Length: 99
Image 1: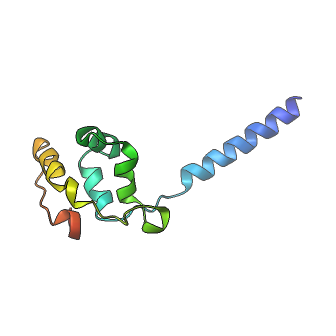
Image 2: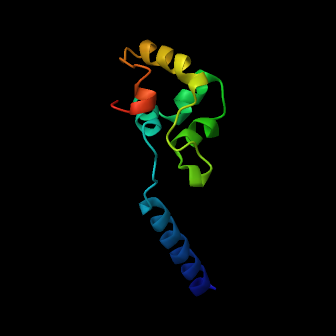
């Protein structure tokens, strides 16, 4: 029984290491904007939406994301969040990047 337990633990550890080492391919400019504003959780709290909404902005279109595009409807609120954090954000950052 100890041998079975060890093999299960080894497999779990191996899976966790593989998962932790896999790099997520976040799309720009959303990834940089979200990071500068404090991360997906903080941005979603401020906007009053589910964190998965914000996370979708960073995902590629093939992964059911927006391909790095932050929907226009959120721009004004994100600029307000940036101002509250004393960050200089412009509407162009959501389209062209350069954050």
